[in-house]
Image (cartoon, rainbow, N blue to C red):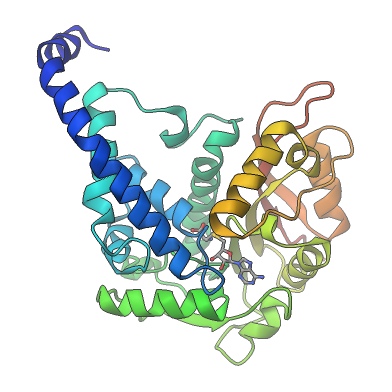
Length: 330
Ligand SMILES: C[S@@+](CC[C@H](N)C(=O)[O-])C[C@H]1O[C@@H](n2cnc3c(N)ncnc32)[C@H](O)[C@@H]1O
């Protein structure tokens, strides 16, 4: 911390402590309202989709990853339409700015490799970077399990590409209502509903303007952990039917990490909070990178980038990975 900032903080400390004490009841009431609002759409729409949204809001307010559209959408979503931004998100970011210290979980981009807490930042960064490349090539973009992601809205005209958002009917209906209420320009986005456990995403896209002969960038962010072996394999197989150079970016946990103490605790928390259990993790066969390569290779894809999550050593499994995989030339 710089000496001047430290001095100002010391001088202001009685005022800051008083503000902090006054804020505690506001924070508690805010948390209760948020949890109750989340509970109201439980089983109908995704609750976990709020987590990456919150991270993107924090990155935006810290000035590390602009996402003004996320800001416009947030006050129109069911769990966050009551003053969530000014009551919970903004004070948190102000305090970070005031202290001049960003906790590891909120740093963007995080270090590579990163820990579990940097997972959302890592996947966001890898996906954004690959998107730049694919948009420049004019590829189609498909978001599988789009949630409250707003990457497809108000893209610069010169980067406009066919854009598809796929999600369950319940989650997508809520997003559409929010997008309309926020007056977002969704003219470039095609919405398609699909439950991946019932239908492959590729079949769902048929008849919606998706071109199977065009190179495609598939974003599958924060979804694999809610699925199972068969659905994961079907999703990847569908990607391999697309033209060479098509890519899928996604994040995964390892099955071994999900069974560690921390993994089990995280699973319990997610299940209790959202009732959307983490059910899938990649079976490691040795170290992470070769396991990811072997798994994707067996499904017909080449690993292009692999960002490791967690540090592995003898008997300590990596947490997971964020992966960019490509359809090879045939
Ligand atoms: C953690 S959220 C991630 C949302 C978004 N990708 C992001 O990063 O902001 C998980 C998303 O996957 C979707 N999802 C989970 N299981 C699904 C399934 N079986 N079929 C379709 N979508 C699913 C949820 O509806 C939710 O939008």
